[in-house]
Length: 449
Image (tube, rainbow, N blue to C red; front, side):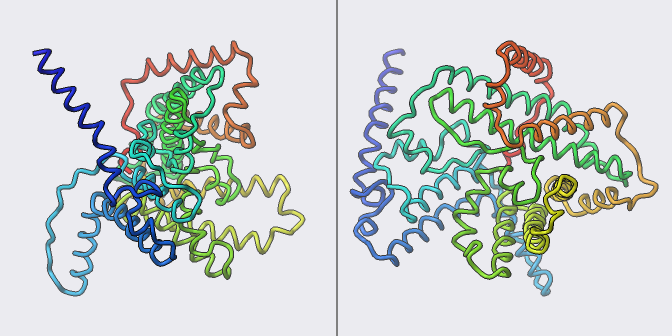
């Protein structure tokens, strides 16, 4: 039996060893200039041919994403349009199993294609390196979006290991799990779920606390995963860029998107906003470009119109902010402390309003939540207990205070300034809290994207 298993394993290993050279000899995959460049494309130096290759590659990537993630969404909207014009059509519901993290590894593949077209990256000649760049497991299922231009060079010339790198990676993983399991799931998720799942009208206090709970939950959930991914990669010898930079200390929406989901915002900026013209076009065209980019950013998050509205709200915020800057940026009162505080308050409040559409499963729930937040339910219900109110308020206050304290810094700098005993104590407390509360944890929110 052992000999048979060993023989089977040897055959599988031999097959894998032969796979890369076989693929590399195929003109579809490899020809002199690198992996995934066909024979005609490698020879072609003219711009139309390169553009045709780009369009084909992008369409191939996006078609898979479109089928798995947006297939039923497109059919449902097609049915709705036909019904509006009097045509009754009942398309079949596709029983599609959405691959975990499909949006992220699609963007990984796109970054490789687009960077080669832009001339900022040379095609790799190794199938192994390409597959590893697309499917590097720590960040595969929920980000951050790692560009091929940042990751592939580390496979060619591995970064030099630093003293304490492995321990720092473990500390980041502990911090990420603490953010996810203790803060997001144990402290905030219950209140957010109760508020958004309640079928009746709510008073303003509970409505706002529910939205603030979700604002904290999604930050700790997503930033927690990104921190775990960065820490795990660091333990393996790879360096990934930060994906969050204390976003709830942002003053203005441009600042918010420089701090929130940085890998996505820079991806959309470099590969969509700038090719559309960026800031080098007329103001009206630049505003339309912003709205287009944020519309697609919202749609990327999920196949639902609530995500589209979330993206359009942020696009509108960015346009309004740009108009305000043009009108008032040079005023003497524009940069004093009171104005900056007011701008932060408006930014945080507007972001929370947009989170309503991100969290709500449909527009009925979103409308009911907004009505409660702005006093539309004078006789609404108060369902949060005093403990839950204090829990959300305390976690939110500490989160915002930490973001403001570290606004111009980063976690590594802050930790290195602390004495070793303080770091050890905080690490032990986080690990203990994870062990005590891990039974209440849920899947990461961004697994569904």
